[in-house]
Every structure is written in C-alpha cells, then in structure tokens.
Length: 581
Image 1 (cartoon, rainbow, N blue to C red):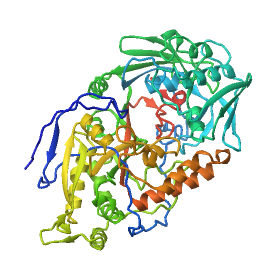
Image 2 (cartoon, rainbow, N blue to C red; image 1 turned 45 degrees about the vertical axis):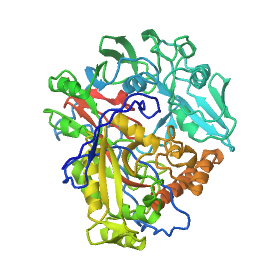
Image 3 (cartoon, rainbow, N blue to C red; image 1 turned 180 degrees about the horizontal axis):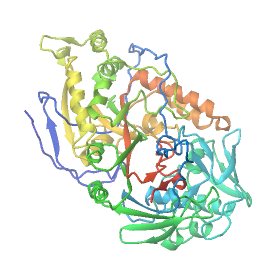
Image 4 (cartoon, rainbow, N blue to C red; image 1 turned 120 degrees about the horizontal axis):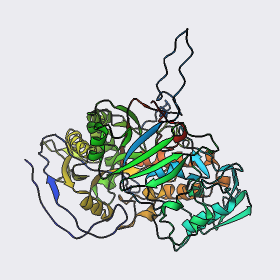
C-alpha cells in the first residue's frame, strides 16, 4: 500500500540557484507498491572507491546513429504537388502568422521570449542546426589565438540596424562590456570566463582578450545577442523599452499589447527578406490555455515542452514536429552512500536497466542515450562503451562484490539488505513513470528500492544538499561540450554546486581543465578530450544515463518551413517560414 508522510520545511531553492523559501508536501512510497507510475528529474554523479576492481563495459564497435536534425525546408516542408503538364505552383509569399508561447511579457534582454530574442536580435556566430558547430553570422569570420586568450571577430559590412544605422564594432564592444560589467543586474546567461576585455580594432573588427585561455567563451560570447551601442549603454539596460527593441534580425518589433507582441518582416534583411509579412506572438500563462487557443484556431503554431505529447496529440487539425530537446535524463548515484561508493555496484545497477522498456513506457517522447551528450553534435564521441540490458551479469557483479540472496529475494551483505532510496519529482509526466519502472527493474535483481516522491521545491533542496541515495533527474545539455560543473570535484559544494552526487575523478578534473585551454581552441582536440571524459563517466558510472526527451512543435497545415533543432533552437530559420493563404 501507499505509505505517505507529510512534512513542511522553510527551505527552498529558486530554480537551481539556491535561494531560500518554503517546501511543499512530500510522498513516500513503500517498496511493496505495485508498478504503476511515478518519478522525478535530472541527473548526475558518483565517487569511486580507490582500488575497487571495476568491470569495463563492452565498447560498441558500431558508431552511434546520428540524430537527423532537420535542415531548412528538409522533410518538414510539404512538397507542392506537380504534374508533367503544368509547372509547380509557386511557394506562398506574404500573409500573417500567430505564434503562441508560454512565458511573460518581459522585455529584459535575457529573459524575454526566445522567439523575440532570435527573430529581432542576432549574434556574432550561429550554431549549425545539424551539428551545433559555430558558423559566421554577424561576424563574417573569427580567429582564436594559439594560447586561447584572444578572440578576433571580423564583422560583416552589409548589416544595418532596424533603424537604418550601420552595424559596427562599437556596438559589439558596448554589448560585451554591458553584459560583463560587475554592475549587471539582469538574468545572467553569458559565461565570460576569466577577466575579459573587449576592444574595437577598427570599425569592423573586435578583439576580446582573457587573462587565461578559456575556450567555452567562444560559444558563450559568440552566441550572445548583440544590441546597438545606445541601447547597451542606456540606464535601463538590460530591461528595454519598446522603442529600444532594435536589432539586426529578420523581424522588426512593431508593438506590445496586453498579451501579445506584433512584428513585421525586415525587408532589408541582409540574408533576404522573410516570406511572411506580419507576425504576432501571443503570450500564455500556461500550456493548457495555449492548447485551448490552438483548438479554437486562434494561433497557427506553438511549441510543446518535453512531457506534453499526451496532451498535444489530442488536438485535431494539428501537425506535430518532434526533435531532440537539449536535455538528458539520468539516474544519479550518491557517492556518499556507502553501498554506492563501490563502482561494481553502480555498474551492476546500469546492467539491470532495460532502456528499451523505459523508451516504450514514454511512447515516442524520448530516445535512448549513452552519455550526457546528443548524437549528431560535433563533439559527440564515437564508439562509446555502453551497458546492454543484462540482469544475469548484474547479479554476478553484485555477487562478486559480496551481495548475495539470503533466501528472501533481497540481496544482503554482512547481514544488511541492499536497500536504496530513489528520489523523484512528483507529478512530472516523464520522470514519475520512469521512477516506478526503475524500482521494478531493480527488484528483479534483488535490490530493494524505496521510492520517494516530492514536489519540485523539496526535490531541489534535497538535490543541492546531497540527501539521497539515487536521484532521477533531467539536465540541460549546453551547446559547448564543456560540462565541468556537473562532474568536476570543485563543484561538489553542498548548497550551491551542481555536482549533486559528490563525484570525484582526478582524471576528469584534469581533462576538463585541459579542454579550457586547447591551443587555438581546436575543435578536434577539444572533441578528443571530451570523448575521454565521457568514456570515464560511462565506465565509472556516477550515473545511469537513460534517455533524451523530445520537444515538439504543433502547427496547422498552412504553416511551412519550421525546422526546430536541438542545437540552433526553434527559430534559427524564421526568415524561411511560410504560410498558405
């Protein structure tokens, strides 16, 4: 039966930042609960006992399949029927579109709707939608010094701001200085690394220097939105006034209403004017209200977050586009738990998981993964070791570690049962069902799992305090391959660090630091270091990597050209969207 305990505490995290607040009710589910659904979120770490013998997982000799990220118009734009006797009908031009999103009406630069960010403003570089590799955007070229301390960007000369002013190096320098200022009081998103200084070499060249080499800054600064100098240096920055919504992007800001923004195409866009003439972005308080608006034919297109598939597939007259979300779902093992401090136990817990069953449970809402990166990314390692489903091998590894069946189907060692608590976030549509299934799979090899469900506030507090044996979680995958805040030992700080599982590896620490200062930030060298880190993570198993969730777009038949990408985002090709009359 369900055994539910209620508790109240005044501790809380705001998001994952560590602010204080109030915790809601938690639920404890006894081990005897029959399989149904329940789970939690995110993923992380481990710590391996020195001198403990560890079995290396078998390497997969077949390269992992590459995620097919849609290119502009590829497969997602329905073909116009043709005949042998008539020329193909022209693609539609002009018209209007209404897009729905869940969010706020904020005009803070880093907190406004991603649609506004990407359609109105642009960056020096842009990610390739298929690989995540950085390509020129506002910068026509870029160069990294041999010591990785200097980035040089040569700007395009054919770009103008929406008000007609020319785009210059002074705009870039002012934007960098505004975001990097110690007085910046907005939402932080750009990682500037060590002491940064930006300077305009001339009107079309910007040079950025660091006190130490810092390769992740190429991605972070390169994809940062650039604003006019007058806007970046204004007293209200980073909170913009409507009149300050001046960018270089394919759409121009026109007006802000009570719950919507109006935009129009930039006829002078240097990559070619967008096909759709008028755009409206409607802001909704929640996904259910937005779906109701779609059902009432008030909007033409809307995104769907991971876990919303069950709701959006009920909509009629809807096309659903799916692509990988930049996230991974994993089961984190706490190295501070004595049982889990043995690498053999962690490996056995990996072999006990049938990931194909987990995938089927979610019904098209995810894909299996081997590590905390998405196949298709430029730095994704080839031929990673993996854990095939092998419960017999799991039992044998546990027996070698001293855990044997004492006759009651529960493994024991020194008279103590192999009993672990699994914490998950209650009511999460993806993680809660997975948590129940994980408990069932572990019971099959003699591991007693006590399932603990808590609201998000309580779950986050527990994660930051490292108060769990196993933690089911979902984590964002950054565009840059640097993930040191998840795995490095200096991030093992209770209350603030993101190394929730107290994982410690001197080799991973060394590789992570080396990757920050690769000569000229060479991508091949960085990818090789990244690959070694992932192979160590898989072998030492601080987590069990499970799935990557899907994100969705819902559109009407009249909307053409959407090509959402896990690397470039949903709006990278807005200028190529079209609508039928």
